[in-house]
Image 1 (tube, rainbow, N blue to C red):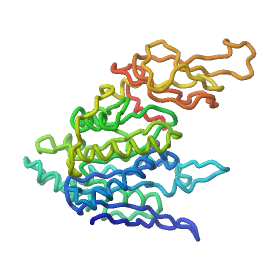
Image 2 (cartoon, rainbow, N blue to C red):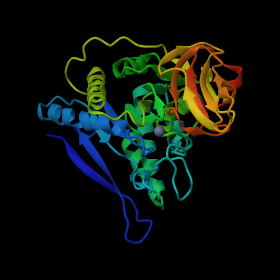
Image 3 (cartoon, rainbow, N blue to C red):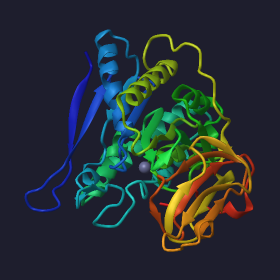
Image 4 (cartoon, rainbow, N blue to C red):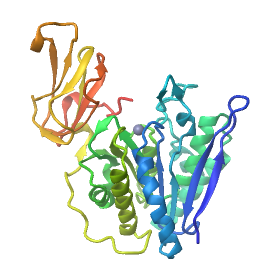
Length: 383
Ligand SMILES: [Zn+2]
């Protein structure tokens, strides 16, 4: 049996406290393909941890039966710093209290360092390049001497992910249908199969890759950035890295966890990491759409947020997706400020009904196929 559990100890930041990350390893070290799965970088997003709760015993069983051909690393809750953020009976977990960083930004773009280390040696042999780049990335991480807890977390976690063939970073939205953020370089290819296996309602691609230094962004974009930098060399997109948004924060249940765990397992079989029959690919719900076609609605005022549609509804340009209601205004319908869709597409994400919002708060996202002038140059991340 290959299943083992290890611990990454993070440096203590205050006397008497220390935190650690639990890591599960399945399959032989160095076996290919390698998949890396983690959940809860935003520590208050637990549907992905629930999917892994169901996936891990399936992997342990496959391991007992000798079915794991590649290597699988599972980190069920990757961010113990965020997990510890209890404040006034609320669990926070999205921003670091020390540096105020969003936990899913400012991951390490290793492309410059890798270019310095092995750029001259990258040639026409794609397989050799993959090995050179992975070794250089790991050497760079190995040479880093992070001081504080969060920097250490980022370096140590990337040591587990940077040489993987598949990276799945499991998040969720506040209230949403299941959707994926991918690199255009992975579509259709591996990302289409992933979207179908996971049952994604929407798939949004960054073109050509995510500019923001999100975790899944840096792992995938390492290859794309090097390919752009060395156009003469044969550099494959050797890491298919995806952010999976497992619906909304409250979508944690046994039935969802179980079906999400099964879907992840089936995809690992389909990718040849586990022996078995993946079966027919489920029907893809919607084609991928560009991030530049994603319409984002912002609240024009403060007030009570109320929606007209359920998440996952197809909407038309000009339709009111939600109202922001001034609770002190007695004029009934006149107290409501509608927020309109500016494209045709899938209304896949919002907040929960009845919450207070404020000017500029994101109140919805619609995945549309058409590039939108008002979204040009925007990253799609509103923190
Ligand atoms: Zn998140």
